[in-house]
Amino acid sequence: MCWVQRRGIIRMKEIQEHITIVVPQRGINDEGKGKKHALYLLISKAQTEYIWMMDDDIIPPQKTPDCQSIDADLIILPLRMESKNSKPSLLERLQIAEYAAIQQLTIESAQRGKAVMCSGANLIVRRDRWLESYPDLHPEIPSGDDMFLLESFKRRGLKIIALDNPQYDAIVRPQTSWRAFFRQRMRWAGKAPKYTDKDIIKCGATTVGLNILQLLCPLIILFKLPFEYRLIKKRDQSVSLFIAFILELFYPIYLIISLIGGLIRRNRW
Image 1 (cartoon, rainbow, N blue to C red):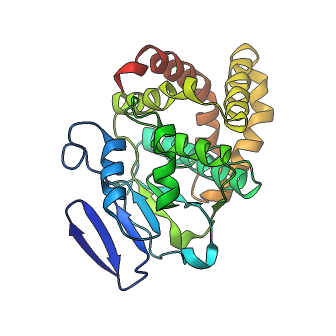
Image 2: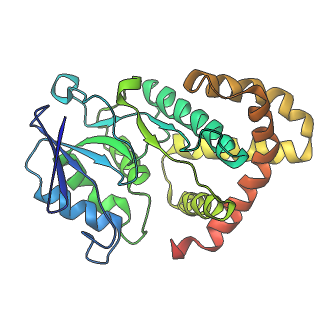
């Protein structure tokens, strides 16, 4: 696999010449206007049919999907969270468990034709379709390019699929401090009021409702834990039942903090 960087565009050669990999870098190719503008500049310059969007802090997948044979407008690829440490901290282990559940929900919902999540850290899209959707990405909001793109594609009836293959996994790292963890979650939550897709809204409302109910009636955890643990284990066999249980206890509190903080600070992200 050969990687060549040229003016902010990273192209994968000797694999498939119809895919350009773009890695937007704030402060380098965004003209001071944020990640979405950086993506627009890079994707506009690309000449290939497909664009593979990646974050600059991931470990890329081992394999390249054959986009032309798949023939989709948006291809959701899996992510796996791993710590750099041989003995991850409790915070890292909780994030790994949560991320496994999120990724499994992402893949399963897309496979059922009701995608509710995707991540621009590992995402393939038809170049022309992305450019057509750019006005729908809320350029005035610094983040959220992936979720607003998903909404736009669903609204336009474009073909969305998810590939569930470990060879397509990109590796992401957990946050190493509670402050960084909550800042990230607040940034994610701050975009929620802009979502309009009914599947995304339903999923979010169900999640918030169940966790508020758990705060009012802790026994709800007995019903939630088996479902959540099933999602986690299908994605990451290394997560123990103990960590999943601790996550369930902690989740309602952190969710409320993230929602309130995200709504208060949403104009700063």
